[in-house]
Length: 553
Ligand code: C2E
Ligand code: MG
Ligand code: MG
Image (cartoon, rainbow, N blue to C red):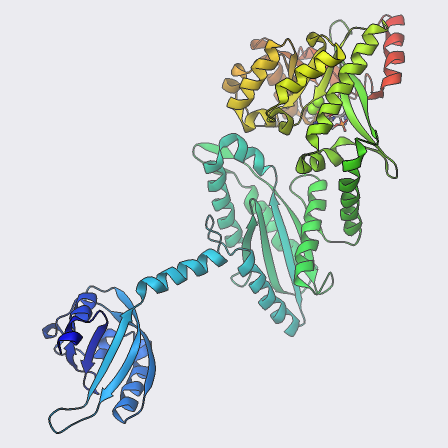
């Protein structure tokens, strides 16, 4: 008997009715009962209610000489915990000296089961938000599709991406971004029916499957509701945040029967929604495939475009409000695509950034702008600053300062004739690092401007640290400045803030006299926009400036 008593397995013995006859040391340790404590208790008392019927059948069958192969059950311990066990039940038949006894030999597999459960969760749920991940999502999609098909109804896949989430993440930090995502997940889950699935499938990307719908308007109703739920303000670590989302929707069965394709099409529709501006949704349509195709063509063409000299720079002047003098010329990149014509930077800069091509492309822009400016000076046309837009990728590149120095050396342009435009968002992504780089740029004698100011999340305290010369008010505030009081107030606040920090303030996107008059009244220093000049090819810049000189403007 000794080896039974000291075995590692949990061993117990009961009568065929379940009354305890023996429990070994391991069993006692795991369950917290001595044999005496078990007086009046049966095996049935230790297993969950829904297991009891089965257990009774097993015990009966064993007593009658049958076999039970694998015992898998949960025992409730004395202090109320559950121990998951796996093992065998055997019966020693009645003999001359002893009654029949059922022997259970089990292993405690609680830990293993818990690990299995955790592994399952890891494989099927997103750890941050607790929502299903892509794997489980595809599974649910499959089920919903089958149901929808049986009922001859409609299923929608809604692909949801948060607008400008990266800005929040980069400027307020990942912990804030994470908390925001958790709350977004919660709101989405509360906004759909029990039968629908919300999953997180990427950083700020969610998908929702809506099954058993009657018509397209059902989808619109749910999607509009989700959008307005997400648009309510969030309070996270004393920040009041606002975030909107863009949603793309594909429908089963009309858009596709294949699940992967349905997801892809919803994703495409989401990009189309983004293109409409923030906070909107789009249903998938055929033309979107063409759009995706265009992106593909652009991506491929981009690699060869530098060598083929397909890029060119246009220049747009910035004008001093008081004197009417031109202060600087902003270089704006264009791609003269052999088939598609002139393409605006918004269409290909993100592609260049994704592929890393922005580094050689950015260097080309810098060099070309400096070369052109030096040439204008040498020919005696004018001595103006040329402003070059920088991508965050360039600024974070380890060779950035060396590249700028080399370009200045090679072209012979004096640093005071170069200006670099950096967007507020880029600065706020890595404020400490960027401040360091900008200080070196300033020490080289180069002019620094913050572009698209007012769209990021920078604070006055951050601004003070920057060694910048100019703030450019984003054109979104200028657009309705003559009709929208809030925009006018923001623009005016930026001007006075800039003045108090000794910075020049430029308004971009000035198209009308009405906008200009208001900017004049707010004491904005410089303006830039179609009202004065569109971005011009290099050759036209000379004529433009010469004409202005002649008219004495
Ligand atoms: P940005 O630097 O803020 O440039 C201003 C954009 O507004 C330019 O668009 C310009 O053509 C446009 N614009 C100028 N005046 C007006 C106006 O009166 N009304 C309106 N509605 N728009 C006006 P563009 O040239 O398409 O450039 C878009 C953005 O692409 C630029 O915004 C800049 O962020 C980026 N970009 C342009 N060239 C380069 C470059 O060489 N490198 C990098 N990294 N980015 C560039
Ligand atoms: Mg700019
Ligand atoms: Mg701008």
